[in-house]
Length: 216
Image 1: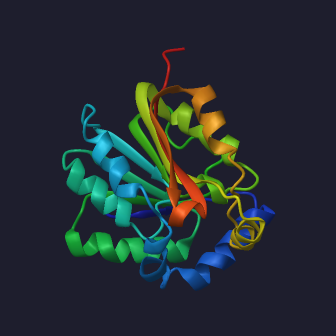
Image 2: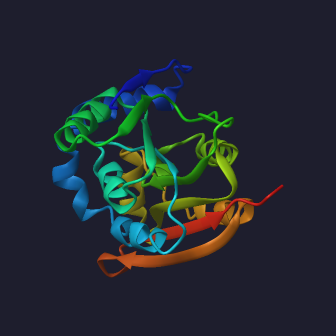
């Protein structure tokens, strides 16, 4: 079943700005972002080595490319994709309909848990957290509330850059590269996989992280 569930949220400054940003970028996203978003395939390949999840939530699912990868990787799983942008979800809905994939779509800001009463086995953030400013820590905490004990939290994202000019340019595109995400992730759940890799000869670095939620 393919569906969208628009939900309300406070019209925070970052919410409005990101919505405007993706209104213009949604149609070009898949054509341009492949040259920046490294490590996504490797993250999913590593996840395949763990016990197959039955329920998956992807935060910041965008145009749905990762959702389809997750569907093909774990065909028996129930998958929900959540994103702030209605324009990005419109692109995702078109892709999902082509493959008739049983993926649900939810439009909302992720600063509160989605379904804590029916927790997920796997929650994925793919190049999303670095764009949630402020609120990235709230998103991680919400994910841990949505995750079952022992469930997996998987993240791939920008880490840092030695270039002040590049950092400023990325900030204009709503991306923060301050090496702030990985320490918080490792403090909030048990790391199973973590690596920091260079891109374009060290022009910037990205990280991959898979952690397990504790039982407490």
